[in-house]
Image (cartoon, rainbow, N blue to C red):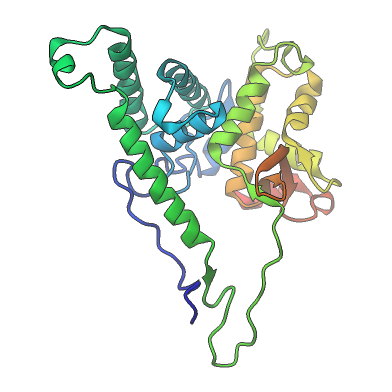
Amino acid sequence: MSQTESQEPQAADVPTEGAGELAQPAGEATGQAESAVSAAPPGYGVKLQAFEGPLDLLLHLIRQNEVEITDIPIAQVAAQYLEYLEIMQSLDIDIAAEYLVMAASLAHIKSRMLLPPTDEEIEEDDIDPRAELVARLLEYQRYKEVADALGKKRWLGRDVYDANGMGLEKVPEAEREIEVGLFELIEAFRVVVHRPDEEVLTNLHVVESEEITVRDQMVFVMKTIGGHESVDFMQLFTSVGGGRPSRTVLIATFLAVLELTRLEALAIYQGVNDEGVPEGGIRLRAASDSAEIAWEDRITELM
């Protein structure tokens, strides 16, 4: 077996970020997905990939702001971080305590940078209040890079085979798309909610009580995708609710997208250029020919 071949890689332990998943899908039961929502089903959780957490969110914001890890604009990043937490709370996504601890840490660092240094800090050569956070981010980024490199190796029994007669190596086709993570989805949803110039948000107040279920919106999403190779994420929310959705409908639709992804009925991806850099909008694609499926019955079976 060559050096590039490996057994199926195990996730490395990452210090300071917690091992495993931050939030388990507490809403797997049918009853929770069926319940009417004024914002989102109570206790609905999202299963996050391993290693995702507050440091992941900070790295995402740093990349988004196109700044160096060693020179973080704390005030700007802290405000964006809190905005993400507010969106997650509005979706009833379970937020692990470490997210809140990081929010407090950012507020503390921000206050230290605004206040004049104490005599003790002057004696310590005026250490940058961001230094400890920067060190954690750099360490975490190294672990992420190692984990990503292991994930790209060819796995024995999946991509390559041993000499006992399984045949030649399988050469994977060049991928021109990447999976989209939870933070990228939340950012896209934030853009939807904060576009007052668009028709999609001309009716955010609810005059009458709405009976909207996540299941209803799951059916809507799959029917919208039906007959299309893929659908743009933003266009989906433009078409929901007859083009004039309430905030309730927007949130229920977003939760429907997350649930369909968890059930592997929906794939969420983004195109990349020749250098592997994401380009274009986020797109949704059905895992099978959705035009041929009665989604009301199929979603009931999946749930």
